[in-house]
Image 1 (spheres, rainbow, N blue to C red):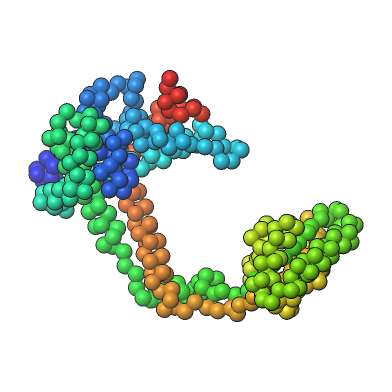
Image 2: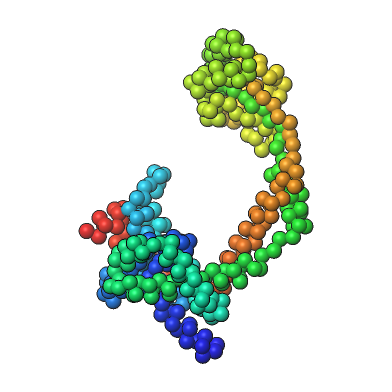
Length: 385
């Protein structure tokens, strides 16, 4: 490494220790124009102590402190809610905090991987980007964020702002050189993918749009099936009378919907209809599908017994409102979509490989006991009180 590069590396690493304008790995426009909560006062930086602000991770020699993580995770932790009964708020908040730390680690790895190439970002391009972002923010917003970040002067704020912009541009340059410029997709690749997925992805099979009312019994209570079918006959009679004066399929369907919502037991009947696809992947009752295929569009079917499965039996009646022939999406229609999909897949592989290589060059150590320090089911503010 040349003397100039070595000097630049040392300087930028010094900046990267604090990453004042945000190191959570969000989009640059979010971070840097960013969120005041992702900033840190130089004074607070000096007042750090191992007890109040422990180091929770080290990335190639760069330290990440707990308060840096909390600055990015606190709001999410505060609003966290358990969705499933087996989830606990503590576990959810642990995931939130760890995800934020992982984002910070990835960002610093990219910064470390880019500092060996100062030629990628010139002083002129950096200053142009600084001025563009400052113009977007406006003087009032700059002043507000300067105060919230704890900087004593505007010059101090702008000095750190420029450092952060340079790091953002270097990070982007690394991704462009190591990922973006190395991804290529040929027409042959796109065509090959289409041929492989034509029948499974790009084919819409024959389908029937059906309003149906279905009732079930546990198989061990099969002896009650005649009574269940009798109940369905009664419902069908009411539906038949309700739709007999309708003059269009749309009106028949509209008049049947209230019965479906009230009397159907299948979840896919809740919206009033279910599309049946002529494919083995559709898990509809075979007897039901067979009857639908031979039904006359617009006529209310008779009540029939369903084949059921090992757990239950049942009965059903329905109204077919529409049929559609099967068709293949032509290559010309899906070509761009497929190409974008393959590009994304290749970018993902290169991005993952880049991350692995950076972790080999710049070892990462995480101290989970310190990362989760003071973490309970309570929000961070309440837990620390």
